[in-house]
Length: 508
Ligand SMILES: [Zn+2]
Ligand SMILES: [Zn+2]
Ligand SMILES: [Zn+2]
Image 1: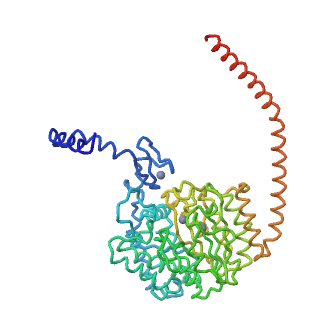
Image 2 (image 1 turned 180 degrees about the vertical axis):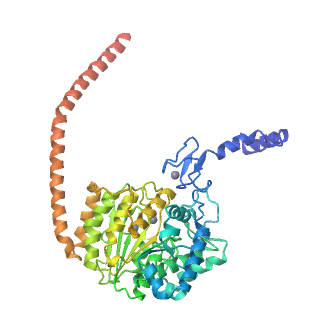
């Protein structure tokens, strides 16, 4: 059949059946061959009922049935105006005493307007439902609105942005507000509301930082998007427009903080934050992330990236060599690397770049950190800088995982008991290897790590020798039977082939 034949055939067919009714069921069938998971956006084949990645049901009602459409938003506005009027009525000293022992949350609905406008073959994982999900979870738990108080939102100023980003970058983000849809990179989108959402996110982070540092509130959680840790001095990438954590660190310093610790437990390396504070001894950047020899996005963050220009050691990268990393490896790395270095550094303000994409069930991170693990890490960092701790949301794309993880973290900020306590076990082999490598490099800048490196290294050597011996013994045991088996087999085949050959030759 040539192309011309095909055209003729099609025309003939169309003439016979103008309504194309025969084709419709087939077309419909093709359309429902796959479905996208509401909870994690991943694609599944039609005959699968539960999502392959996160286990969510195909016809999940988490969004449709109002699970995440909580009365939160109206309540938040009501409580905000309530607290504002209360603040106006009361004198400032009593207002301080009310909030100085409480946890603040930064949130603004206008950040929900930032979304990908262009309909693509796959829904974008960094979507407004992420904030809706966490907000609804907090509302259900009576945390926010409830036991946390909202801080008023504002847009970050040009001057504040310029302390972190180049004028060209700020302008390029600003320009998107005139465009219906635009892209910084193929996966970093913007719509007409994105620039404002990014300014509000950064503004909330800056204000939370100065509120916490000045003691007007105990600690805080920035429930913000777009995320920030991939945004560098002059580039937007990896769903990030402005670097919220960097802006918060500088706001804390503007309020008087001398040394700021940033711990980034997002599953991706915060290349933007690392770049911004490279060569800066007043900000210590620590990141735990999947790296896999540079094959995991964004590819930076190897253990040997320790900072430059006389600030070596003020950048600490803990690069996992595989996926599936869980609570035990994270907590082990905290005990061996993060806490000793943080103690030696002695921060007076602490920021967590809290992506929840290393959480169990995340479609992008494919790791295994549970809410109990996140709560434990928060508890461990809460011991620094007099508890002046700001948690900033970065990534995390499984709605259920990010909701339960963020809720567990905020409960620690509130000083509340979390339902599931972390049960400590040892690290995995690869986790231990990564931590050893980091210790070996960082002990040159942080002498406090020396003894624990020697000790762990010795344990590792003993473990390796024992393992080798075990393997040798095993091989010796299995060696004889294999020879014997193969010996018998070869005799058997020899006979069989010979017989076959004989049979064949006889027939001739
Ligand atoms: Zn899913
Ligand atoms: Zn990270
Ligand atoms: Zn991430």
